[in-house]
Amino acid sequence: MADPMNAEFTQMGWEPIFQIPPEARILVASQAPGIRAQEANQSFKDSSGDLLRIWMGVDEETFYESGLIAILPMDYYFPGKAKSGDKPPRKEVAPKWNQRILDTMPNLELTLLIGAYAQQFYLGKQRERNLTETVRNYSAYLPNYFPLVHPSPLNIGWRKKNPWFEQEVVPHLQNLVENILVE
Image (cartoon, one colour):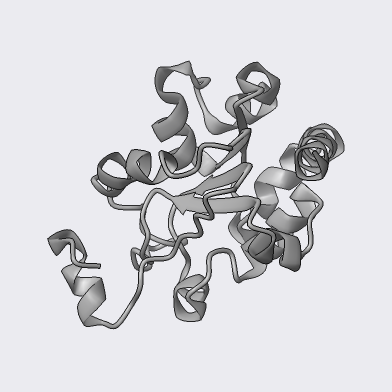
């Protein structure tokens, strides 16, 4: 909050939104909190989070209270509204802070890359030509990374055009998450 680049948010009384338990085994790397998450002061406390938890096969208590799931976005504050959806995360936040935070979680086994911004940051040139192809080829990034489309209601059209995602990818994700959480 003391970082000058966050002064605008601090003045509004907003706190940075992330969840970083040191014993976490799964990291949810996302773009930035939505307005509902910012107002609730909790990541994925919205319809996107409800769908993400279904995809992962976990309940709210496991997601928020187990200490096994971390949430680290590309920006820690709601970036504002755009014409369609939210504005993108600020580009300078993740390079400045994320590695420092990741270093506090030595037990991470799997990082879920939620959306194009997280995939670009973590995979760089290793990602495919677009989000759909990166998600389709998710197994190429295992065991460390699991790229996913953002669970936003704005992506319902993408999910309808790509039924393989919920038929093939989601069950594999649920199996991996279950295996990591029960170890």
